[in-house]
Every structure is written in structure tokens, then in C-alpha cells.
Length: 165
Image 1: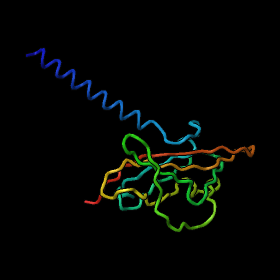
Image 2: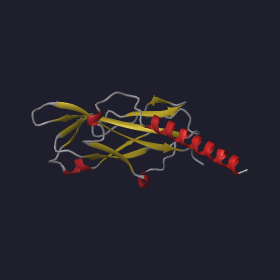
Image 3: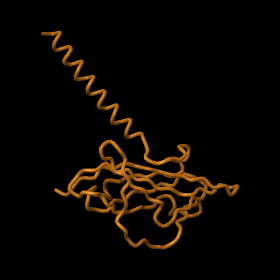
Image 4: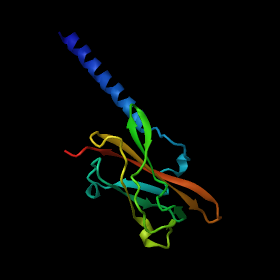
């Protein structure tokens, strides 16, 4: 009896470990290419639960945190890219089109105190509003160094969207 219980526990633990490691490896993959040295370093995206319902029908707001002394330039939509996890693959979706104001580039710079916390708001166009989603959010900007060199910087965060109950 003890031997059966031991093997049953061993099987349960093995299954749990395999399930967790598969999920973690997928969460660590990215559906697009970028320089890892410029990911979540100079900029960072933070999903703040008090600013979101995380409902599939609502807008999502993330905080864009600026962490450098170099200027970073974004287009008005922050080069936003959205992906949902479907059938163990990242599938790109788009945001619901909205008018963005002000028009033109967004410049984050150490001279502008408002650079250190920008809100990025969008409405993900999920395929089915009655389904749960693992949403991955990316933004991309151009970092301008002192020597006028530019590098693409990026940030991402994940959120879980749930249908309205």
C-alpha cells in the first residue's frame, strides 16, 4: 500500500513539474524579434490593476515607465503590438481603431518630468469577447544616444483578460 502511494505521489509531482515547465517556457518566448539588451531596460510596461477591469470588452491601460537619461521617441501609437496565446502559439491581434491625441511623435526625455510615467491606453480587438485571453503587450521606441546613434528599445507585459460575467 505504501509503495502504491509513493508511486502515485511521484506520478502526480512529475505531472505537475512537466505542466509547469511547459507553460513557463512558452511565457518566456516572444513572437517577434528584438535586441534583448534593449527589452524592459530603458522602458518598462506595468499593468496597474486599479486602472483596469481586465475585461475582454474594456480598454486596457498600462504605465510606460521611462528608465534612462537618453531621449526615446515613439509615434503616437507607441508602435503598439498585441498578441494573444491561442493553441500554444502567439497570434497577433490589433487594437480597435480610435483617434489618438495629440497627433505626432511622443518624446520621452530627462528634461520633461512627465516622461517618467506615461499612460498607454488601447482596446484590444479580441476574436471572441466571451473567452479568456492571455494578452501580451509590446511597445517600441527609438532611443537617441549622446552620439546621435539610435537603437530600438522595447518593453512588454502580460495581462489576463476575462469575459464580462
